[in-house]
Length: 300
Image 1: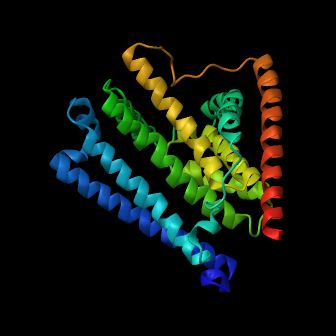
Image 2 (image 1 turned 60 degrees about the horizontal axis):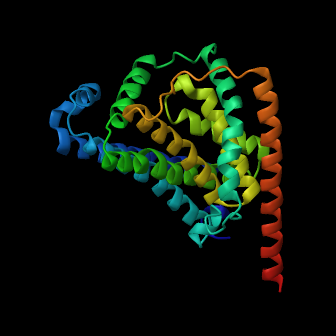
Image 3 (image 1 turned 90 degrees about the vertical axis):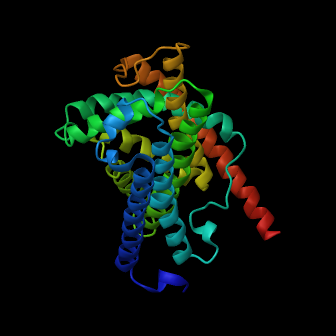
């Protein structure tokens, strides 16, 4: 047996937790050091840095460092510990059908009424106001990062908020944690628990339940497709849409209230859910066909 597979399941989970915790701590230290270099002692109050209308690129690059070292590095280390071909454990060497590029954005769009409904359920939950002070600071920082109207900053924001988190977070939460849970758990439980951890690690409880629901969609897309790149693409589309909408808000191209989604009407839930089911079924069909063709090529 290769690597840590010769040890018990609980020992392997402790290895995942240890690798993730160590890398997460190192990531915070590295990003903090980068912030000190850029802003000096002012980093003790991020809101003042953001409100000061200064150059926030240091904050953007610090976030990139934290994302890569906090999520991608531990995912790669654990994948290597599990299987010698590092990419194979996380299904990063598999690709989803090309039609998925068209289907996935529409699958996400038709799923939004359910996510929006969970937002209103979350508002009446006991955890909605947990860590409200830090949540407000987080909101100010994100809005500050996104308020710039230049194309260069838009591209930086797209990389910082859409591309890197999609790759790094999917690799650790779907590519290693969900995959590891699925070794012993029913796949539905594996997807659920990985989504809970995914939501918890953001430390933002006003969106705790919606993020779990989104995480489960990401988990099922990963499971159905057998490709990490499918959930990465969906994650990037979701985050990228928010960056684009915020940019459109800032430039006056299109105005929308992203912080307060509308409560979906009954007919919207019914119709969108039906369309979502049809689209995910089509996606499942093409993924299953691709796996069948790949298997036949291997056999022959």
